[in-house]
Image (cartoon, rainbow, N blue to C red; front, side):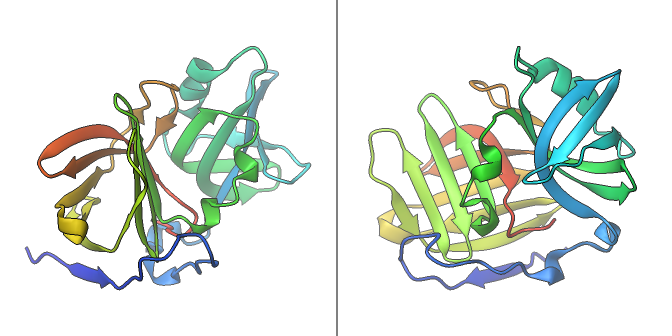
Length: 217
């Protein structure tokens, strides 16, 4: 099977200085008629309610995609019950037919994240701490005890929803491998829809990942 490669030409400039427009060509035909939303999850009267960011309405969640969001939310709920969810589905009146779960986490501020719409991907891991932010301008790698590293990258599609991002910049061989697999953050308990491995010069660090607002897979 032929491996498709797409070269992302970038300048080593700070990321997130300009809006990244969504490339509609990435949207799968199976997503037609669906909407991706972020918002707060709460439970009431035996139902799971979803309130989209910056909206007053609440939608009753119907888990048509078999995402197990009710169980995921129950395992994360704290005393305040403030849960953030990033989801995709169809709105039918006051009902939200949920088809895909990108992430669920404890947060009362995630709706205010100014960088979400600019991101293609975010991956994070622990012990030691690391995170990678990917946009159309490049990839920024933050690791504990080291300055942020901004690099260009090549994306390689591997099939079955797997892909990797790689670069040879700054005399380092860096790869970020991503697979569509439920992943639980070992520190925060957040649930994300992909697992990730950051490989730098042969050293492997594992974590979780999710698509940002610039990628609609």
